[in-house]
Length: 49
Image 1 (cartoon, rainbow, N blue to C red):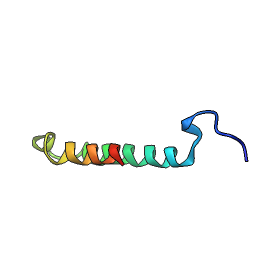
Image 2 (cartoon, rainbow, N blue to C red; image 1 turned 90 degrees about the vertical axis):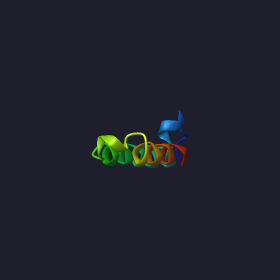
Image 3 (tube, one colour; image 1 turned 60 degrees about the horizontal axis):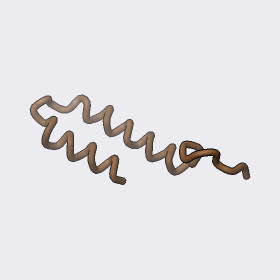
Image 4 (cartoon, helix red, strand yellow; image 1 turned 60 degrees about the vertical axis):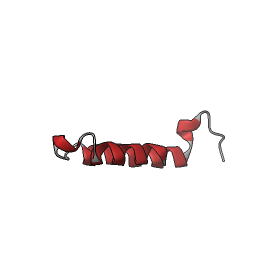
């Protein structure tokens, strides 16, 4: 098994990054009046995971 050169080579980071991008894509279609409500909560939760 080859050593990771940096954190982006880690499979766990790649999966988490993919998840966050998906959450941002989905929440982008939420109503604009939810930008400071549900949208920000979803995005914060995704990034913290």
